[in-house]
Image (tube, rainbow, N blue to C red):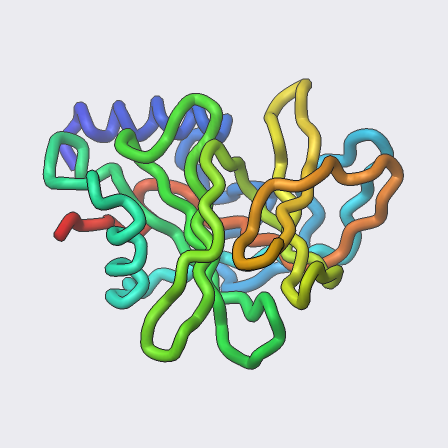
Length: 208
């Protein structure tokens, strides 16, 4: 990566996620596939206990990439393509024994100062079906044991810094959407998609 691209990547990381490239991200040592940690900060008495943090996959998924690109048909070759990357984790969200995919996109094409998009895909045979698209999302995303309409509830940070709070992302009739705030004094358990978000770890998303 050229020096200007490195500078832009570092600036983007600092603005969106509050860190620069490091060996430890979200309180995780990024050398293990999964680790136990509690880096989600409590607020309004909300406590995160026995959270398992799961790193994003490192091997490109071509079928998933096609599904992502279908969701962003305006994404074409241009300046900064090397900075536009995706991070994904496989999680069975509806207990059908088929891994669904949580995808976090980063880069100048996708992100704003408020965050980056989270895409939720249902495994559909040899393909993926988009069942959630949440812009301006921050990490980590917690996959809880609680369900709505047969699908696991997610929890995401709604802001950062002194304004940090958490809200549910719940499944409706056919897709996930942002729900209510997590109640004060709630005890949350589950898995956190704590993707190791750094340019060298993400998978470059190449346009069609």
